[in-house]
Length: 123
Image: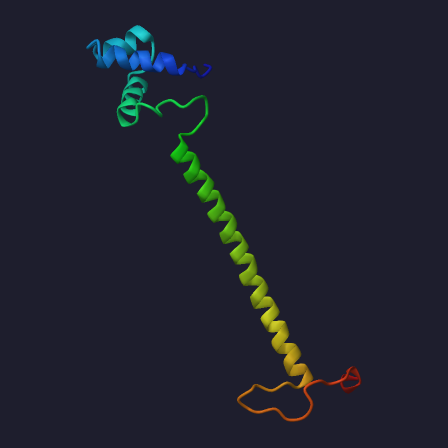
């Protein structure tokens, strides 16, 4: 069975039928051939925010769209942070190995000898 779609006007008229004309939800759902829970959701949506209720086919309300955008941005930033963390760990190990290889000493031990060794010293 194909999913039925309803226009914003139809939904608002269904809610008016229940709210303003006093028709029971069960009677209105039978008359309009929609499920009772669908009609209840429409009424709840209109009561929550009458102006932004039923924004369109597949469209989110403005605040929901902003939240989705921010969540996407947070996920991207977390991914970038994780990449940088991994890169820092990898480069730190290599840098320390290189420093040990060329004979650098920590500042607390003092420096002895030359800061820079030539490539000939490693051969």
